[in-house]
Image (cartoon, rainbow, N blue to C red):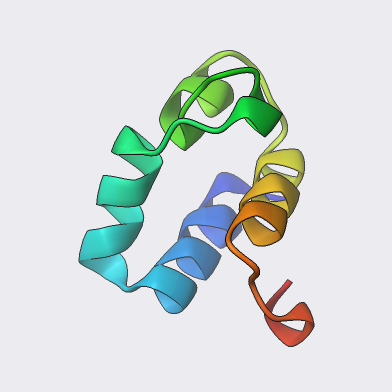
Length: 64
C-alpha cells in the first residue's frame, strides 16, 4: 500500500484533522508501543500499520 493511499484511508475514516492527531498521539501496543507516525518512520509497511489501525479502532470491513 502506498503512503498516499494509507493517508487517504485514514482521512476518509477519521476525518482529515482527527486522522493526523490520531496518527501523532495514539500509542498502540500492536505497533510496538509506537504511534502511526513512529511506526511508519521505523520502517513498518503502510499496509501493516493500516491493518493494526483497523483492528484497534474497529474499522468496518468494507473500509479495510
